[in-house]
Length: 469
Image 1 (cartoon, rainbow, N blue to C red):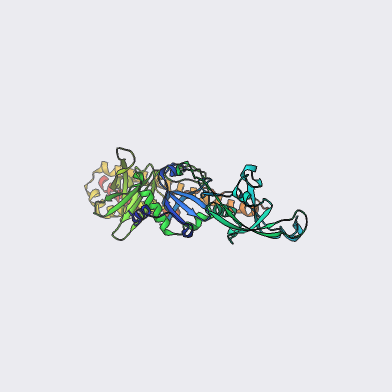
Image 2: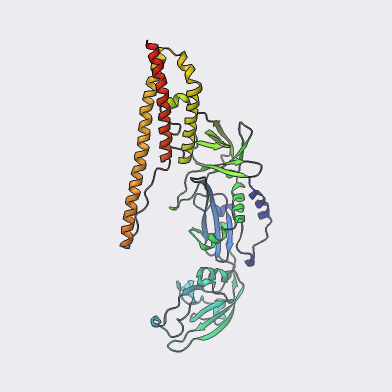
């Protein structure tokens, strides 16, 4: 689909990442990606100075104002798979420096430092018996000031990962005295014990937010690689549609949807992209079920009739679209094309505006001939239909404005409570859900339709009066 397809070829021939080139990424094994929530069939394996991560669950959304949102879910690879192939017999923990008046030990606690803990002793001070550090004379009483001249911003996660990816390190430490006096500076060159890492399929992952990932995703090449990995799966392979005017659109099915903050997988999505010779433009991200929903492609509205998968139920084979034309009898009866509420606000506004324009054109071009050809019975039916439609439409408008008013008053009350909570040092109340498919502009458009129907009703009543004479 995108230039990202070229990225797939590059990734297949990319040499193993070296520490000097971090961050780097490769295509994640499908068995590892399937461990993510929702069991997606793709992902990127991200290598950073602070650890190894799985990136997957790529989702595109079109927000209000045609702003494109893209989101992913990140997982850290836990040890042993999340580390490198070297072990030193201890893990690092960070100790923050203390002020002189709070120090419990002279000199040694003025500065920041790392200290070693042993897994064999459940995270207590110590070294693993027989480890390379123990053999080199290193001790749990040594406070580590830097490793290869680096302090890693005193991030113990990054420091531990650095140890696991280096065959040897030079550690500058201080041996803290038991009671009084200054620490003794010491230098150690430690050799890591090489260990066999488990296969990626055996790695354990944990979802979360990570600073290392936040930095890496600033690189657009990473997003392109993730798009390529996603579209290389049969489930997300792009489908090209040729519209009735010859122009093209692309549809991508995302069966894994998205992962919400409460770690639940949402319904699948269908992404609709306009295709032009120079670019692809996201037009809509439609959740399932898609039947009956609207999508606007190349300035024309279409109603989605359905989709069909291949024999393996994985690859998208067809999406059926029907060019949408406003149905005048439906509009005369006061029914809205988007009354089901499945379209988002901006789409509802666009569809209802198109319906108003079609109704105006019918009033000017077709209504006079229909009135001239009708008899008394059909004239009475038209008047009754219009009057009932106006009553229905009036209730719809009042309902929209009432719901918007309730939401606005609830938000004002929430803000007032938040201010009071802030004064008392308490947590602010959560935001209330607002009507996401309704707006004041939508209500105004329906008010315009009422005005159009009133004009049509006036002509219909005049025609009926003439027939009764």
